[in-house]
Image 1 (cartoon, rainbow, N blue to C red):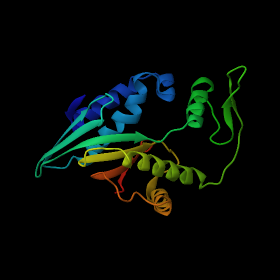
Image 2: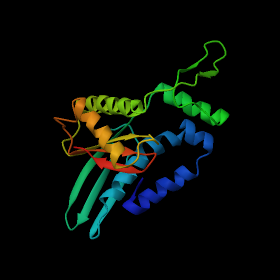
Image 3: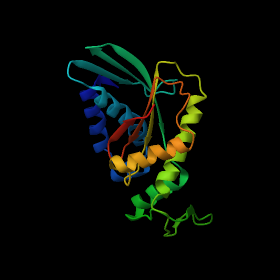
Length: 208
């Protein structure tokens, strides 16, 4: 895929809207790439679009070293590769599967596949109000460190994407960033810059 920041984002949005509910929630087929790779790249392109600056966005959609490429031209000229990584785990995948099949899934508590019936067993649980942010910060740090060990081109921008509907606004982001710093921070980064994007709320922050 390739286009201006606006046309690229519109194309991605239209493809996401065309997904069925089941495809979207369980990330079946193209839904996974759309949600975990193309959407974050599209949002970064829109974020970088300024008056007088032309932004061209490309997604390679292969297993190469870079996931995409962005060029800015006009008032200034900049071009860089984009690498996207996404926060996810097996439990969250099970919750999405349960939500798709039954229309409801608990946000906390033990969840697993029964070994005999293969049905999803979910227990309704509770957790500290700050626990999702603690877990998210730990996952972001883990993904960043894994990516930082790999041999990417120096002129590469890293996007760490996630879905957390409860993380909205300045206070929530301040709490998340404080926990990331407490955990060691995104230091000694080999990347040109690092962005976090909450795909659930369309909020993007440059953090390094």
